[in-house]
Image 1 (cartoon, rainbow, N blue to C red):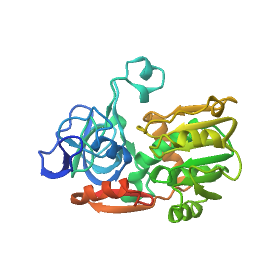
Image 2 (image 1 turned 90 degrees about the horizontal axis):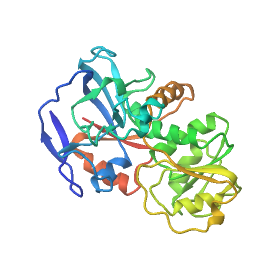
Image 3 (image 1 turned 120 degrees about the vertical axis):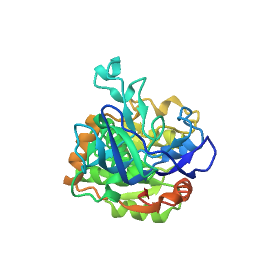
Image 4 (image 1 turned 60 degrees about the vertical axis):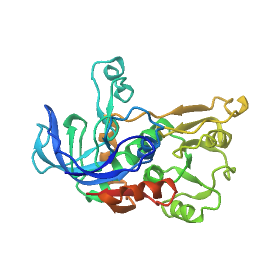
Amino acid sequence: MRAMVLDGPGRRLHEAELAAPEPGAGEVLLGVAACGVCRTDLHIVDGELTEPKPTLVLGHQIVGRVLAGGERFGEGDRVGVPWLGWTDGTCRYCRSGRENLCDRAAFTGYQRDGGYAQLVAADERFCFAIPAGYPDLQAAPLLCAGLIGFRTLKLAGDGERLGIYGFGAAAHLICQVAVHEGRRVFAFTRAGDEETQRFALELGAEWAGDALGPPPEELDAALIFAPAGELVPAALKAVAKGGSVVCGGIHMSDIPQMPYELLWGERVLRSVANLTRADGEQFLELAPRVPVRTEVETFPLERANEALDRLRGGEIHGAAVVVP
């Protein structure tokens, strides 16, 4: 099969012919139809996430059709493969409904080969049925940008005035969910990024402006999707007493020193780690009812490096998707 392969941190992906994966017990073999490109992929390429398998195929927002194996799904079924690819099921986190924190978890496109390829093998317990109303390209971003964004939103509480910092793939999906829930959304972007600000307003945000500046009024909660630590003090300053700031990324630059008064007043600062299968089931049931629409830019498999470069440069509005 054709695949784009990472041989080590800091290197470009290269196209290679690999042996087709053989599904093991409880696994399915999928023909990949589309794979979303995630900022986590950049963190792996850049060596900021330090435990990838050698000779890695990236990609963890996979939509494909079952070719062989499995019991939950039949041949030809369309399924999605997310970031969480396997857990031990026995640790204290798994047994308490927190499988996203499993110490032995294996992740798709990180410890398990992912979807920048024509074929992928996946543990069928961690696969999801794709809602019928979503074409392959539009479904792919739901499987990480959507799922992680949804978990981030849930952990922020029910506050009406919601700030979203970093208006990329996750934000453009979760903005729609928040508006559907009756929340007021305030979008924070790079200063002067008028194009992204217009995009946010089109998706239902009532205000869009500079991420390091003040909002027009206090926020009840803030979601941070950009991997920029300097946004944490800015968001804490923007939320009212008792408000929450939730960091939705797997990696972030260092948070600068800040005065305690920004946290005081029972403000909450927390992170999101991975996802649970329950998150996936809830979000994929909700998405068609909103309905969440995904804006995508597609790249053929051999141009995966270009997709990553454009994501790094902030040049993707919505989400990028690789198509084998």
